[in-house]
Image (cartoon, rainbow, N blue to C red; front, top):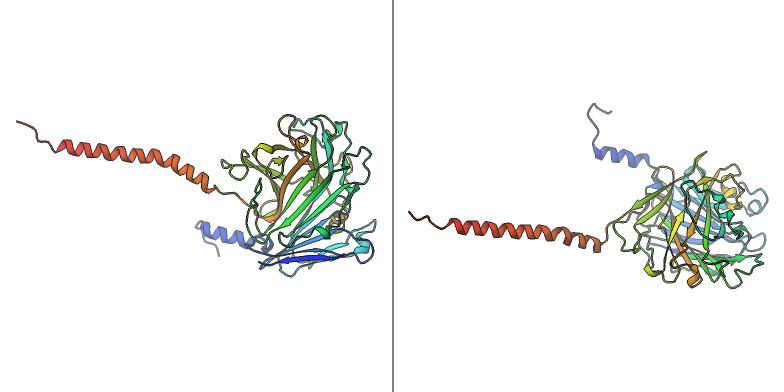
Length: 408
């Protein structure tokens, strides 16, 4: 099967000026990481001419001087390879015989190779269940394995044909699957879905958490629907792995704001950064939702464990990650756990959704919304207006009093 959709849209001794420093910074940054206001986006399912249908989705976002490649696949665990190049003419090359072999190294390439400015990957390895979640500063990945519920490896899921879910209007596609081996029948009437969506320009979705996206980003929405709970108010978690930077793991930063208009009662934004900016990033709000559409009453807190080198136990291997990056890589992993032991939860309607942005360049930054700016203007302007009116009254009163002549 094959499916595709497109959517167009000499220094002196004096100190250097800020404008000169900014100019030097921009010229030093790779063209592929500077960002584009709009991009021409295409989605294509790469056909496997050698045998059965394989889910390999290529999102290509072309700008004036750069191209972003998002390669998503459910070969093995669900994974995405993100590549940014400094040319609008870079292409994806797939060697299916090598990609599907036990040694897939070199089966996936973006050409020309010297145009690549950044590349990394995310692998969604396991879905876990646990009774409660108690985050600690030194939380290890094995924390999940202390629960009585065995994890579900996404490498052992059966997935839908991604071609059937391509949506030209929204530039999206959905990977939907369930475990091939499910003796407890937890997923007998349920499924796990990963909805991938690209964008040709900046905007914001209608549903919370309403992450601000740009033409340099791709959004992933994870939805667990209809799976039977196993345990009293137990929690779901998602294990995510990424490539390390040598011996180190990527950093995770927290940003805080006083504005919660787009995600009520959520004032935090988490970011995973692959190196110093501008570089690649993943971005999410620490909130999930137990109803559709999501809202404040169905919001669930999310807890992300610190990134740790994945040395304690082997991770499920992604063929596309190995095909692009080779076999000699260090991985780091973290867990995102959804909900708390009290309050709303998945058990309410057997529904859970969580969103993440993936992109290159500078992560989108939320400015203060018009509503908050209006409130601030009223809050700060009213006292000033009162002082101004009071001052005018006193001035006029003093002037009127001074016009009376003294009586000798």
